[in-house]
Amino acid sequence: MNQLMSTTLILTSLLLSGNAVYAAQRIAVLAFELNDITSLPNTPQEQIRTASIQPLLEAAIRKTGEDFETVHINPQAQTAANGSFGYLFRFHDLAASLGEQTHADWVIVGQHSKPSFLYSYLRAHVINVKTKTLAASFDIELKGNHETVTQHGVRSLAKKIRGIIDSH
Image (cartoon, rainbow, N blue to C red; front, side, top):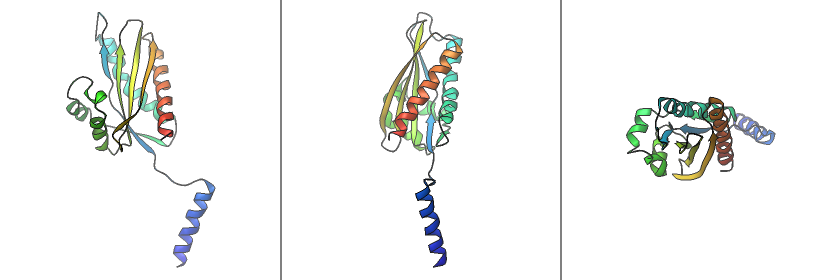
């Protein structure tokens, strides 16, 4: 009986002090697809830039707070689940099923859309794995193709993702 009372007092104390222990939100960021519709599409530079978005976004999400944890989805599993270009971007339930495999709470599915040499867009869908539904969709405009432009856009996207997850 003493042990039960002691445990109850500790839990009550934690709840009252606001230091209750909770699990971090687990977020899986899929590799971004390049949708380059310029007259000179899919250059090696744009492929490298697009490949950099996933790790940049994972790092930016982790920097938004300790209550976010990024989880890795095997690239082969993503390729196998993605029936064709944009498949996971369009079918949220399938992206959510991919997230379930790693026990993610959220999946970020993205495209780097490049309609012009002067600008491009980071397009991202935030998918709630539990409900298998789209929670939000974001389009971040990138003016130019410099590394700092991409980093700034990714940080902006991470803040928007943080806001939507915090609101759920």
